[in-house]
Length: 480
Image (tube, rainbow, N blue to C red; front, side, top):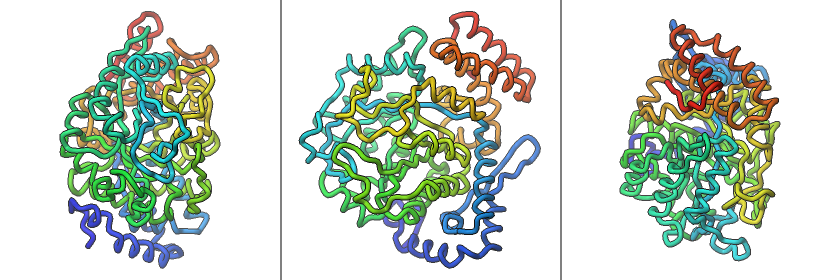
């Protein structure tokens, strides 16, 4: 029986409810009156200086996903962009993944790190190698990382992850420092989540891969990840352990995309129902080629237009969540998705263990092929060319604006008073310390223009003074 408040995976991700949802969506995909009603509900409502959104239920979002009427689809895209701009402005947060180890005991059929892959080189970074990777990332200009590691209790125990986090935060090279470490590691215990919280992590990220239980168990034939319930209930344990920012994600292409979207949105509804706060982020990776993995064997691939609809539906349904697209996708796809709700992108990414310290991009330990191989400077310039402010800000996390506190600020629109000037100040840091001359000129032109959009004169003056200090002195890390 479907129950979003239940602690059991098969209750809050209920197969019967998903199938009923898909049937309802199919029945109503041409019901234009209903579709218009749903679109109107999704639209952001401005009230004075604030803005609010109702969001959509999983059933309502699936009706939009199934809709085939071109004008309604276009309206959906327009509203998705309106929502993104209302709550996140034209800022795009930038991050990079850092792969610590590709040792893994699982048998996942879509990942080259699976245990039976005997020809892929196995590598685990030492703490000195972690430092070298962090320095390389700092020299690019990164301030925010997402650490990745395979599941292996012998080679990658929680103690190793904690030691790496401590090392990452300890490295200060020239003007560089990593100010936020997000963690993407296997499902674990409440006690271990408490340890991650105490280590000062940002968001705990865990991709469900697929919400279809039968497919999940088939795709994870061996290893601890085979346990569907333990994996699906991980976010509840993370919240119980004190981590109030969690990130969901589906690996689109493993199972039928409509089923996956319904499950993903139901998971978000569950977190909201039980903990009063939904996912801090939602990621939308697609299955990609890697080493011995051929994405075509899964036979559930989705084209770019369907992918765009999925992203827009998520933005309408979960308006306050951060939405992430990685370098799995091409420049063209990423540019399109930025128009329908994406608020975070990776840049200059390498998905191999120890990949940042080598001049040439290594491929032998990559978790997936990187489609967008541009440098961070190129990505930063590209974002500005398309009217987006590249943001290296980590202020909310460091000021304790996480979980329900962040969502309350976001839902009232007050987060704009912090995030806009913080984005400009961190962009100025990047321009001074790392940018090419062309990007630097482009960036300061954008900063000058964007400063004028700050509504509060006092905030505008402080931000402008701080940016001038960044330009003329070695002072860094100003934040609201």
